[in-house]
Length: 435
Image (cartoon, rainbow, N blue to C red):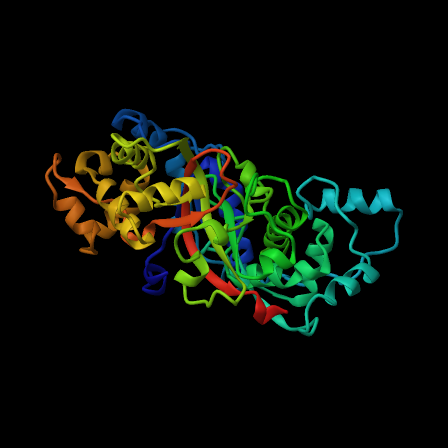
């Protein structure tokens, strides 16, 4: 943008895998005639000769020689379409035309308004019943969502959230939790080449009011509230942010089954520590939900033996991706065993985990995403990345800050199970505020 404002012609260069995405982003940002050129994917791991071949070969999207495409894009004068840009219609109809039930279900699938499991059709009567779950007006703006930072955020109302709650099979009593998740600003359909999913943790009295399971099978499909709240979070994310279409608004290479539903209640009653909600400013008598983005790595085990528990945690932390810190989901049996080993608070455990996560600098910089995302920050002098870059190859550096590591107690004490999963913390939102 700065170059173009300065009168310097520019061309956006992409790999061919992202052709639909690049053109879609330009279109929704009002620049459908943006000059673009493409080279083959991948770039990482290719030799200099192979990369040079990309430049001397054809543009895989245009078909003509890459150099010709670039030169033409740089030298062709702007026309009226380039200068005027274009708008993008974000309006959606409130009601669909009458059709049979089968016809409407097919319409929802064809428009990609579903997660391709059967839905409850959101009739006016069903949406009205769902809205009884909150005192907020149907036209009140809840928040905004977008699949990536490169797209303009879409604004949505209470009624639109209620429509997606109906589709997910949720009950009106669940709506305050779903509205709180919608207000978090965290999308459950984040578009990244890394296959993210969302995770949400519920705290406070709402857990028992809704019959949410925090014990045996808590993170699985074993209670209606958790399953449908999680599904509603996914549906509202894709429908109220402008879509989640592979190759266009979703780029996760493998995808993630956790995207179907990953909402659960913390087992506050069996935890030796304050709940996650209390850690983040809420009283134990208040209900809240915390939203995370991550889930693209998961590892864990059973039991932490006296002689080797720190080594077990250390090896597991080293198995996590150094670019995104973990959330630890601990069965109460594991949490109790850590207290007996002197970790009386979550903060003490997190401090220990941050220390045990240290790895040689060479291993940290051998990570593709650290090269892509952290290295430019390091070169710009931003800490702690600058210190990581200045470290000798064998120096141990700490990849995670304490605020990058989260601890949640969940499970039914049938075995001392623990799990680490990628988790970027997006915030904790009051559920009571949406009643």
